[in-house]
Amino acid sequence: MKASLDHLPEQKQQELQRAIEIIREDIDLDMLILFGSYARGDWVEDLDPETLQYRYQSDFDLLVVTETSRQAERIEQNNALSRRLAKAIHRTPISLIAEDIQFINRRLRKSQYFYIDILREGILLFDSGRFELAEPVEITPKERKNLAEEDFNYWFNKAVRLFGLYEFCMSQQSYNEAAFQLHQITESLYGTALLVFTRYKPSTHDLESLGQRVGSIEPKFLSIFPKATKEEKDCFKLLRKAYVDARYKPSYSITKEQLEWLAERVTLLKDLTETLCREKIESYR
Image (cartoon, rainbow, N blue to C red):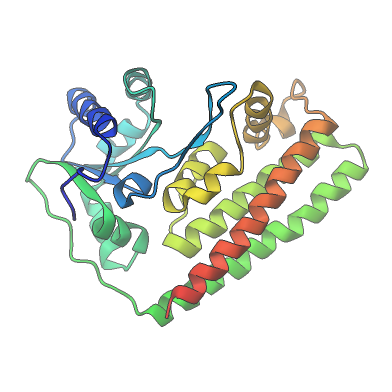
């Protein structure tokens, strides 16, 4: 694992140093690792010159390593820490995940290449020295290709089938049900990319969280749902909330026009997912 941040601009280095200080003040941790686009050096930022809002931008992806699973759970549920980080480092969003050392080492020994890639590409920001990461058990490119093809065929084809349900709901003017189907399509496409690239899909239905994960492995995904205007933010918020609210809350409301805009974005996501995943699968040789 690397240890230098010299490839980052001075401002980004300063933001990370402040994030390290805040995290160490608030929680008990054993390691802090930067991974994803800022570790690799392929982060993206697209600022709208009219609104001065980012259409999309890469997050700082941080992995907190703890001694116990209970510590990791408390960190992921620590909303106060998230708010403090967002207030102090307002230029660059922070996506933080926490796992215990035993969990990570089991995944490394089981050839879980989400964690193998973090070990290979990540930058160690803090280390208590109390634990060591296990030596990863690598799988062959052929094995990795076979697994990626299996995941792609299942999850991508599921997303394609769900488009038919979305179109039926629209034809019946069942807009809330259509929103739920779009959520499920988006979740399946994000899952496709995560599994093909990393063979790891977190057990969450939160499109914000899944989108951050996908954007960390391939920044091209970040442009799918721009958030430079209020209308764009509102549409994505409705899509994100559709998993629960569109099914169970009578107060949930979405218009035909909002659904059509979202469907255009999800179609772009489908096309990008297919292109990038097929390229990734072919690279496993």
